[in-house]
Length: 313
Image (cartoon, rainbow, N blue to C red; front, side):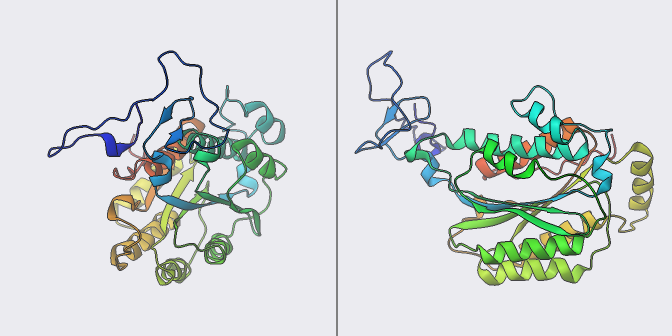
């Protein structure tokens, strides 16, 4: 059966499933071939006469902004093992930065699996990747065609070195978002760092206002990676005193406020809006789960992205 949600029933209607039209036990059709005159070929080789559910999914411009400062060269966290890309990543960055590359690869692979392959299931999301330390390097910009391995290959040569500048990173993300704006895609920024850096509210407000002015509020996700337990206790103490200790948290607060105050966009149904979030990933597994959670929230926008904050565990 076709997996499209439009075939599922609800409280007022009965399910209307769409079945494969080919003979039972047929050989898989080639999803990479020409699209059929009616319907589509699924990634596992079935023919359905309904519309490909991938075409009806909302599209996003996902901008990854990843810290590659010297602290990311720490070997206390390493790439996720036993994945198709583990060996390649470890050969270049067997450290925290490599763990981030593992999570990026997992995100892209999850999105690719959701879309499938072939002309009838072309990726509609655009990907950009910005790496930062004390300087900013836009490695990938508005990419529609590269597969997960090609995206990873573009980032592998970079290493973790230097200082940290959140302001330059956010300013660059705003420029990439504005330069590649499309009314067909909602902007999503995933910002990752293993540290803290002062950044003025004005910088985040400028990003959010630019996005709203162009037509859609940006969905901003800050991910804090690899804090040790002692730092976590210090941050927890300050948090209980209602001190705004985390610049990452404050960046999310600004984005959430902008989202809540943004006027409605007739091209973006409320059901596909992904609320901004803060997540704390203390190890490689939690980081991978965080990125997969964000990927899943884009695939199933009717649900909301949960705040994955593990500081109190």
